[in-house]
Image: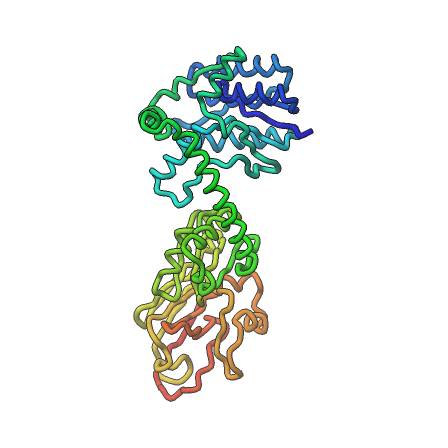
Length: 408
């Protein structure tokens, strides 16, 4: 039998959930979080502990501490971290929460208010940590749960903050939904049924897009690469879904960056996501890159010559000199860009084009240095040089004015 950890706040919803699961014979434990925000929280903690004891099930409680002004999302994240820790430590494979059909309606209205693409309510189950999160009460209304609690003479606690309208969810709960129910008595059930169908459709789309990712995206531990042409073939909803799946995989939101770089008229570009994460576009490839702050190398555009550019820890000098020892100016299309290596980079040599990665291997450039080397690219996308390592071979050397490169 599965071990189920039941999240019990002390409210009627979670008390009904606990009572149901115990009576159905589940192997149950109770988890309760004291948020330290209200005086009543002390009494609620004691109440839930006593309830667990009355059912003769394990009780796992904690008091969390938050900085003043923390958001509801911050509370929720900390709460679920605690649940996951308890599951791992005590061998629970399932977390049960007491969300119900009224919660689905509230969530759908919030999603509409925020103009999100995925208006799909709340799933009945999902992966959580090493196990599963289930919501056994999701089909039932709040009124049905209260009726059950009264019929079975259950005691519960009311959170006074649920009556406040400071938070959006509470405003929707107390000011909007009662009016909806007056003109649309079946709104809770109708929205639940519709949200369930929409969620199933999104689930099918996710599965399809996961298959597309496996076929078209080069995945790694700290980066992914996808060809721009392949990404552009997807519909807008498919692109959004792919971005959602990649964001979930790497733990950083990539959707906006993918869209901005995808639609940009420039051949190269960099979008800082957060912390050490960057999205880059080079050679019609979109790349997710993770770099330390010290090693972050943003592409730098050089509009005019001569120029001195700081690229990471290197200083790159571009000077114009007479003679034929350098890059002929008549071969260059400005503006120039100094950037780092990207998958698929190739450079023209006398023997034809050659992968830059292969050139670096042949030149015995240390592997750890390669990602930080500056490449010089002109406006046509042609790589003119791996600065300090190799310059592209040019057939026309008639121009007596050349660009000379130096790096320190």
